[in-house]
Image (cartoon, rainbow, N blue to C red; front, side):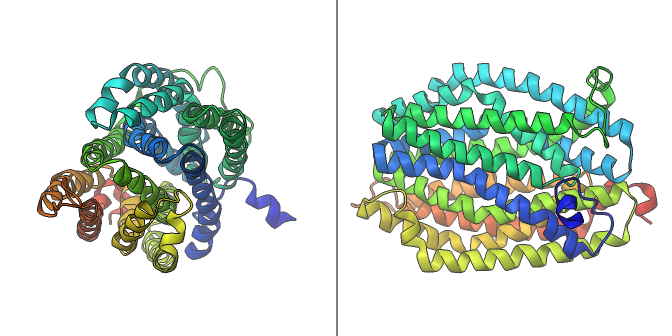
Length: 463
C-alpha cells in the first residue's frame, strides 16, 4: 500500500537510482502525453470518417496557427517547471509557494489575453496559409471556438508543468485521461449524434480542456504539505516574474519559431491540394504519437536535472543523462519498428481515400528514422533547460527549423515538380523535416559536449 500511496504525490528525484526514478516519473508522463495526443487524433478520426477529407484538411490547417498562439503558455510552463523543480529540490517552501502563486496569476492573464487576440486574428492568420476556400471556412470556425475556451487548455499546460516540476507526473496523467475520455464522448455526441460538424469537434475539445485545467488548480490548492497558496503568495513578485520570463521567453520564442515555420510550410502544403493537405494531417497525427516518448523524456530530463541542481547533487547529473538516453532511444527504436510495419494501417484510421493512404504511408517511411535523432535532441536539450539554459536550445531550433528546414522544403518542392504534382512532391515536405531533425541532433550533441549549459550551475557545482 505504501508503494501505491507514494505514486500519488510528488517524487523526489534527488535520491535513488537514476534509472529507477526516471522510469517511475516518465511512465505516467508518457501515458499522459498519449492521452493528450488522443485529443487531436480522435478529433481527426471523427472529422475524417464522419465529415470528410475537406474538414480533415481544415483541422490540419488550423493546427500550426493554434500552436503559434500557444507559445505564451508554453513559455510560462517551461519557466514555471524549471523553477518549481529547482526550489522543490532545494526544499525552499516560501520561494516555491511564491513561484506557483505568480504562475497562476500569469496563467489567468495570458489566457484571457490570448483568447481575445486569437479570436479576432483567426481569419487573417488562416488567410496567410492560402488554403482552398472550403478548407479556410472550416478552419476559421474551428479555431474561433477553440479560442473561446483557450484558458482551460492553457491552465492545464502550465499548471501540469508546475506539478511535474515537483515530481508529480501521476495526477496530471489522471486529469488528462479524464479529459480525453470526456473529449471522445463529446466528439461522438456532438458530431455523430447532433451533426454539429467541425464546430462540434471544437466545442468538445474546449469543454474537456476546461475540466483538466480546473482539476490542476484544485490539486495545487490542496498541496498544503508542500506550499502555501494565499493572498501573499498570489501577490505579484517582480523577482519571480523576471525569473519566469527570463527562463520562459527563450522557450516561448522557440515554440513561436516552430509555429511560424510550420505556418509557412503549411502554405506550401496547401498549394498542393486537398489530398496532400489531408495526407499531411494524417501523417502529423501519427507523428504526434511517435514524438511522445521524445517530449516525455525531454521533460523528465529537465525535472531530474532541475531537482538535483537545487539539491546541489553534482554526482547525479551525468548518470541521469546516460540513463535517460538509454530509455529514450530504446522506446524510439521500438516505435520506428511499429511504423515501418503498420504505417498504412495507421493512416487508414483517418481516411479511406486510397491516394491519401498511400501518400501517408510514404510520408511515415521518410520520418521514421528521424524519431531516433529527435530522441537524442530532446533529452540533451532537456538537460540544458533543467540547468537554466534555454537560449542554446532556442538557437538550435532557429537554425534547424527556420534557416535550414523551411528553405529546404521549398527548394525540394521546386525540384520535384511534375505533371502529377505541379507544385512539387509531398515527399519534399517530409524529406526536409527528416534532414532538419538530423542536423538538430548534431547541433544538440555538440552544444551538450561543449558544456555552455554548465555555466548556469551554481558556482559550487562548477568546480
